[in-house]
Length: 325
Ligand SMILES: Nc1ncnc2c1ncn2[C@@H]1O[C@H](COP(=O)(O)OP(=O)(O)OP(=O)(O)O)[C@@H](O)[C@H]1O
Ligand SMILES: [Mg+2]
Image (cartoon, rainbow, N blue to C red; front, side):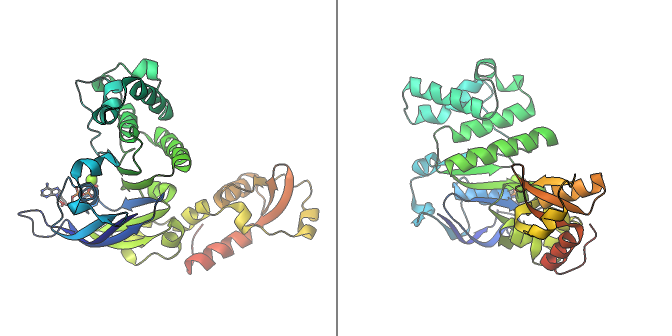
């Protein structure tokens, strides 16, 4: 759906390009997370996709059509953009901020207001309480949610989200991420999501694009990146607990042993875990209950077992090196 090819941006008066020969393909309905240190070019890439910044060279195609020759208004209507600094209009209410694009598109007022209600609810804000407030009367996290609601208002097929959850505390952030993942599953939009939080990248991305100094360093699924980091930069970004992150992405049902004999022996085992839980949660049960085998349950039926040794073996096999758990 989105193809970036040889994309380069050289800002005037700067020695190095902000984005340097960057190529990437995103499939329809996919969430691609751009992650990398401050100043590596993430915002510049998003701004080139919706033409707020003109590339120095290279091409951008959406559905096979060249963006650089497309009609700018048309283009931006197809893309919801959550900007890094939120960017709500200060003298307009929350309701009017969210209604901005539908009104530009000439929607009937009734339809627009209905959509605003729906979206505020979706991002966890009470439409009655919040709709009439002005941005300065909101907390940073609430403003961010309004920003997300505004970007989604006209239901664009593409969403560009620049650190959309950057201004909230870890607990609210985690809730917003979960809500957003649910929304994403039901709406199936193509999303470019920028963050510099590697854990957020692993959680939100179908694919992750790791960027350093304007260059694409690695592109792949979170599992691919975690199990085969392309060199020291990626390894460093992923951190010491790469093994634990891998366990967070692997479900118990994918690793468990379906051994009837063993399950018989484990009857009454107080250490249990749900089949869809991450393996990391199984490890936590083992540590908490001081046991080395957990019974994996689907509903209340035992469907498999996981041992400490097997989990360790799995980590070593995936990452091809020793890991301290
Ligand atoms: N309008 C501009 N003029 C000149 N240089 C710019 C401009 N905008 C960005 N840059 C430079 O381009 C580089 C990339 O900036 P960009 O905003 O894309 O980084 P980023 O990855 O989004 O960083 P952050 O995580 O801090 O938001 C930086 O070195 C920045 O100083
Ligand atoms: Mg940025």
